[in-house]
Image 1 (cartoon, one colour):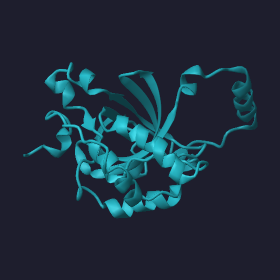
Image 2: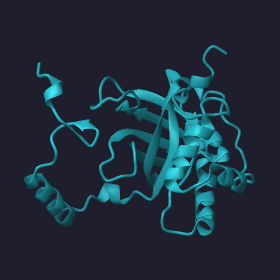
Image 3: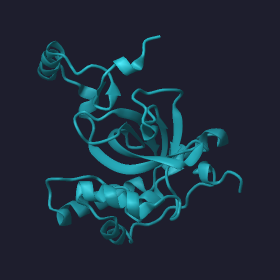
Length: 225
């Protein structure tokens, strides 16, 4: 077995920097290929996910989401919004009417988005439009997401410093209440990077109706109860 100490780290992953040849191929592909599936991405969302088997562990996730249809969204998850971000997982979001068709065992793998929306944690990062105007568009999105159930798996445990996606996929979940992690510290630090304020967003979303969450969702927080 090779000693990984001899392998450099590039963009927080084990591996050599991109060669000149591959840089040229990458640039050429951007011109000659269409990448139609990823061109359907229409929203960038940011929130925090907790590990379902150990909710004391959590990571920030940037979601790049597309509509598969009116009832299903599919999202690629990255550890940042930078060009060299690592792909760390995937999330599917479905409407309540689809969630109700699932059997009990399957429903227990899904989480709600109510707390993420109402607390101001979930945001749509924006660096171009004035915040006052953007808030209208963001609230429209939040009004939809608050109803959805999500199923998310992370493949890369970046919180423990892994330089590669190691081990089996990890089922993740959302936060559902105050006190489950140091919200003000971690969300506050995130807000500084994106120029947002969860307190302002929480106030702006106070009139978004809270749906009744199905009793089978959010099981990570119900274990032992």
